[in-house]
Amino acid sequence: MNRSLCIREKNMRACRCSFDLSAKAFVLVFATFMMFAAASFATPANTDILPNLPQDLHLNSDPQTVRSMPVVVLNPNPQAVQLGFYEPPIETGTVTYNGETFETIRMDGEGSTLEAGVPDVPRVTRMVMISNHGKVDLKLLKNSFRVESMKDAVAPVQLLDTKFPDGYASPNKEIYGKDEWYPAKIAEVSEPATLRDVRFVVVTIYPVQINPVTKQRRVYDEIEVEVANAGGIGPNEITVTPRSISPDFKKLYRNFENFEGSSLDALPEKPGKYIAICDTMSQIITQVQKLVDWKRRKGIDASIARMRVEISGANATNIQSYIANQYNASNGELEYVVLIGDATTSSASAWAIPTDASNYDNGYGCMSGDNPDPVPDIAVGRLSCRNLNQLANIVNKTIKYESSPNTDDLGWFKRGWALTNTSHAASNTATKKYTQEIMLQRGLSPVYFNSYPGQTNIDTLNNHLSEGLSVLNHRMSWISGEMDETDLNTCPVTNRNPFVMAI
Image 1 (spheres, one colour):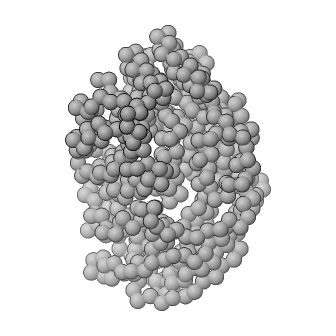
Image 2 (tube, helix red, strand yellow):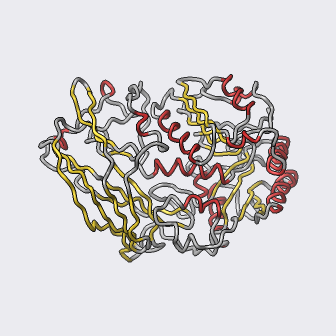
Image 3 (cartoon, one colour):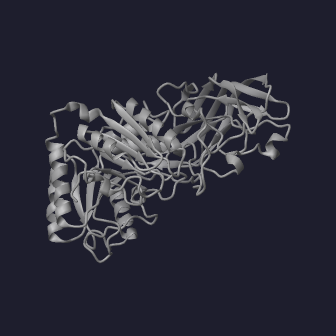
């Protein structure tokens, strides 16, 4: 079946519908990813019945209307970044669990504590650029607070996809039984991570502390911190000194509080290099060369790397080493890698292009090894195909889309769809509502939203694809049958096709 819509098989993919990965898709994926990376998203899957969603779950899923914690960059210097957090816009209320009333303390534009059963208090995270070398030290420069009394104990954290009796995580006795302030620290800093040209940390602030025994809370109206270079050899150092900056990655860097006005911000903008990785079969090379030639016509420095020729072998380690070497040799200018082939085909096939060691393609984009969060330094995509006919169709559609897009209805360029299935992951609804708002903030409109407890409604799928979409962001829940390739059999054939980002 030759369709222009790619559906993930069993692994996470971010792909153009029969097109290679583009900047727009990567930016949107990263924006969503960083939201959860900063909040530490690793939660074990639950194979049992999940608890019902809290009625107020939506309060943390709408960045377009929330009030975030005010933050001021007091010193943007990556050697000694200083941030000031002032007057947290907290909202208090009550909630009842198992017949017991608890107080809630929220900031609807921020996260909260993460461990089930501990007091649920606001948790503010911000990303800052730091120097490329050295360890980091967090200093609390200044703080002031007021003490307020509470009628009830603060509600314990409830995690949607963790198993507890009756779907309820009771208060942690060790914490709730101590006459101490919680959290013990009001400021923390993560281990450094890297994103291409940027070495960064996540600064975490707890603007509210509670004492569960005295039923008091401290509300900090002022917290000023400094993230300073402590010298020595630090984790995840950057050895490449860029001479230019990718326009697409520059958009991502604006998520760092101290990027604007930095030396990195002042670099000239230049599109990065593009490498297509494929087998040596001459017919494959012919088709891939068409794609590379088209990229060159667009002003992109594009080339082909053949398995067992430019790349020393045909396994994941060979691919990873080649990409890393090309990234370093180009002084960090390599920006896009597209894999031509299928990960599930026999290794003897010309179409066999393996995934990385973790069974995804994403790891190929991490140039600095394992980071606290596996943030990619380059964009990696895949043209998943198993024969020449499929590859030719993909290449032709890519070139036609980019050279002569459908302009009969310009509205489809701005239409998006946030889609989720919740059979096995109750938190998906909040995730995709947040994604919908990010898409709206990035200029897409309208952005449709649908959530299905089982199979995706095929009529809705057909209608949206027939109308034309620019982006489809789909979060499944690890259950087969929620959307399969056969669901596309009745879809209209159109050249108004979306980027598909499916997890």
